[in-house]
Image (cartoon, rainbow, N blue to C red; front, side, top):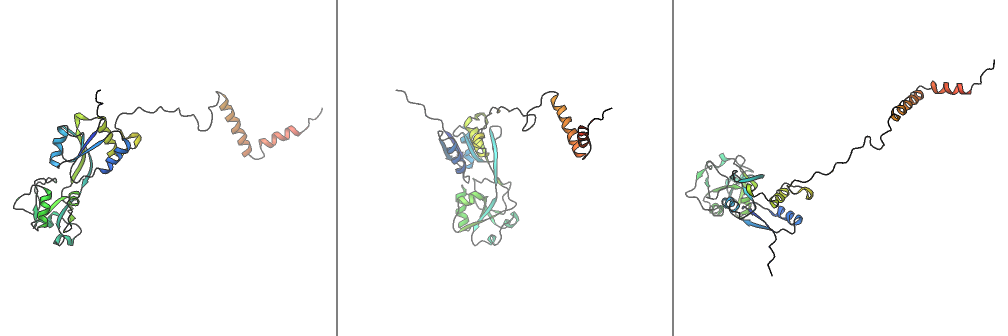
Length: 262
């Protein structure tokens, strides 16, 4: 007895800070027979996983190598500065990079903002991860600028954050290998783009047959020659009626008057 082939599945990789739950739920509703497998990796690992075929598509942070990958930008994240709750920064609702000029700004090796040059004073060393950087902020070693979703992901009761209005933003995109645009990838594209269930697939659909448009709404096309005469007669009658006691009254008088005998 031969083993039956395993059913197809869709493998989706995503990076920290991204929440794919909504799209996954819609996938299960629309495609219940196709399992969706989730794999979380670091932002730096996502491209390698997609390139090596470890996933069909990914929710990643831009940029990606556009010679290899296709990408659909989904949204941009506000950058925030993470500080202790009693830090002077918390006196304001939002701050600028200039407000951080005198702060020690921690720059982890897994930074996803992609600074040309981080603001403030550099820390003595660069921690390996954002999680490690959060621990340094809690120890009052410095402050940390990250996308807002990462500040929420690493939330601590003794820390808070404020938006940095002029800091670079981090862009989230759906990405996949350009030479591996499968039907299931097209299905997921339809979901993240908000297409309805009838148009969720990005595949080419046959155009519905167009119904012949009637000549006039609510009526049949008049027979040849009949329409014009009827229209003229109707118009003349209406004209006579609008004329008051003109043609209509005169016609009636002639019919009722007897002829005079000679």
